[in-house]
Image 1: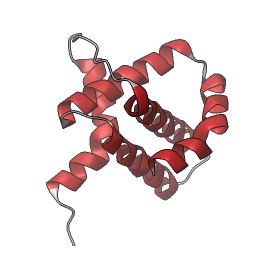
Image 2: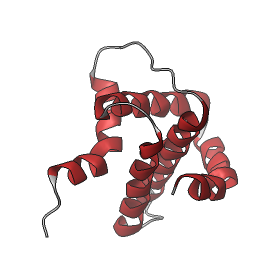
Image 3: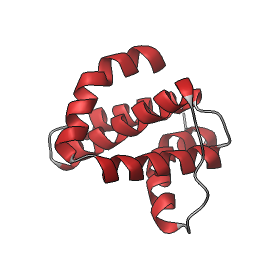
Image 4: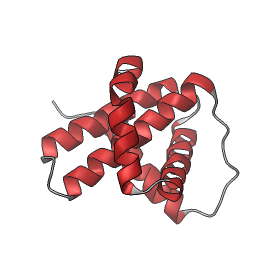
Length: 121
């Protein structure tokens, strides 16, 4: 069975977000609060950590892909259009990269991943 365009778009959302955030001119930051902000943060961390571990050869492709699919699933808790979710994910990637070292990001992920998974998956 061939995946639908919508399924492919959802699976590609985080990668698109990073590319879009880096390639587009600055737009006004979206303000996302409460549980939606928590879901966005969890999704961004999961995506970034899985991508980093895959690039380092510490995760196989299937495991990294599964983690990134879960990150996209977490975005169901974030309101807005797909374009707004792309923008929000890009903003969160940028903030995480700006405010944390890789070791800090990995530590934060290890401390919060169980809660993130139980809350948003």
